Amino acid sequence: MPTVQQDSRLAFTVTWEVRDGEVAAAAGIIARFVPEARKEPGLEFLMVNQSTANPAQFLFYEIFKDSASFEVHQQTPHFRALILEEALPRLSKRERVQYVPL
Image (cartoon, rainbow, N blue to C red):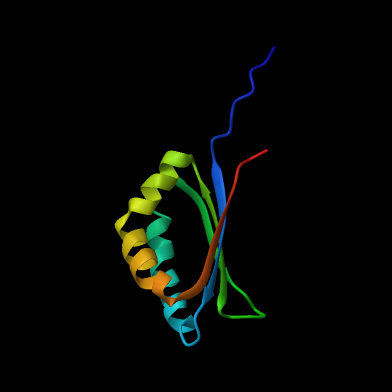
């Protein structure tokens, strides 16, 4: 009987709602963050979109190789400086939802 391998990847959607007057700054932070994050070996996919209906809303879609890769991601200098220190104070709302493969 064949063995089923467990897929250890993690996917996340992250939504941001940016405070009034902070959209350009948030977009600039994202533009600096994305190229650095894409260099991480454990980050398999990263796409960030901006709402056409409400430009203050951003949607991130991320896939990590495993939970360890996600933990490493959160400790990187670019995540800590750009997301935690620069971006979060500009947000009125942030929501992260985790998904696992079926």
